[in-house]
Amino acid sequence: MRKITLIPGDGIGPEIASAMKLAVEATGAEIEWEEIQAGSEVTEKYGTPLPDEVLESIRRNKVAIKGPITTPIGSGFRSVNVALRKALDLYACVRPAFSIEGVKSNYTDIDLVIIRENTEDLYAGIERMVDENTAESIKRITRRGSERISRFAFEYVKKHVRKKVTVVHKANIMKMTDGLFLKVASEVAKEYPEIEFEDRIVDNMCMQLVIKPQIYDVLLCPNLYGDILSDLSAGLVGGLGVAPGGNIGDDYAVFEPVHGSAPKYKGMNKVNPTAMILSAWMMLDYLGESTAAARLLEAVKETIRKGRKVTYDLGGNATTMEMAEEIVRHLS
Ligand code: NAD
Image (cartoon, rainbow, N blue to C red; front, side, top):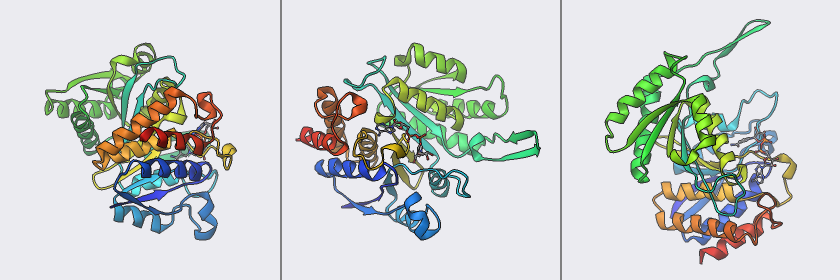
C-alpha cells in the first residue's frame, strides 16, 4: 500500500475530497490516505494555515492531493498554495484541458496540456514601492529554472506519447528574460529530435487558442503566461468544475483542482467533484497506477456523457456525493 497525504482544504474542499476518496478507493488502487488539515479552519488552533506537520507528511509520503484553500486577505500569510510550491520546489505546474462529451463548450475536440514554470518570473513576488505613486516588480528568469521546466515538458510528451511542444513567450519585447527562456527551451528541444517543437508569442497564442485550439498539444510557459493560459484553456473546455492540476518537482508532487474554495457553496454538497477526481486521475498516473487511472477517467467521462447524475454546473441537480457515486457505478 502506498501512503498518500490528503489535505481536504477548506470551503468546498472537504466535500470534494470525500467524493474523490470514494471514487479512488473504488478503482482498487493500492493506496491509503494520511489525512491532514491545512487552511483557514486550522489557523486558530495552530496560528498558521500551514502547520509544520503538513509539510512533514508530504516529505514523508512524497505525494499529496489537496482540496482548495482560501487565501486570507490582508493577513501576513501570502498563500498556502504558493508556500507549498516553494517549500517543496514543485517547479512544474501541469494542467490538462481536454473536451469531455456532455460538458457545454464551444469546442468538442480539444486536447491540451499546459506546463507552467512554477517558481520564477513575476510570481517570485519581488516588488517594491519606489515612491508613493510608483511600484516595481522584478521578472526573474534563470537558465536553471528554464532548463528543468523545458526538460520536464519534453519528458512529459515522451511519457504520455504526445507529439508537440509549443513554447510561449514575449521575447520580441522582453529580450533578456523571455529571450533566455526561449533560448534554453530551443536548446533542450534539440535533445528530443523526435518531438515537434515550435514557439508562439503569447498574444498570438491567446488568439490561436480561441481560433484553432485543436492544433496545439503541450504548451510550455513561463509562470505568468502559464497562469493566464491555464484559465483560458479551462474556459475552452467547459470551465473550472472540470479542470484538474498537479504541481510536480523532482522529489514531491501535489495534485489539486484548478478552482478555489468557492466559499459561497461551502457545506451545500452541491459543487462538481470532477476537477478533484481528475486531479486524482493525474496522481494515479504519476504513481504508475495506470489501470486504475484509465478506469477512473473513463468512468468520469461516461458519467458526464450520460448526464443523469451530474451537478448543477453541468446542467443536472445531483449532489457532489451523488455524482461521485455515479462515477463509482461506471467503474464496474
Ligand atoms: P473559486 O474557484 O473558488 O470559485 C469561483 C466560482 O467558480 C464559484 O463561485 C463557482 O461558481 C465556480 N466553481 C468553482 N469550483 C467549482 C466546482 N467544483 N463546481 C462548480 N462550480 C465551481 O474562485 P474564487 O471565488 O476566486 O476563490 C475563492 C478562494 O479560493 C479564494 O480565497 C482564492 O484565493 C482561493 N483559491 C485557492 C486555490 C487553491 O487552493 N489552489 C485556487 C484558486 C483560488
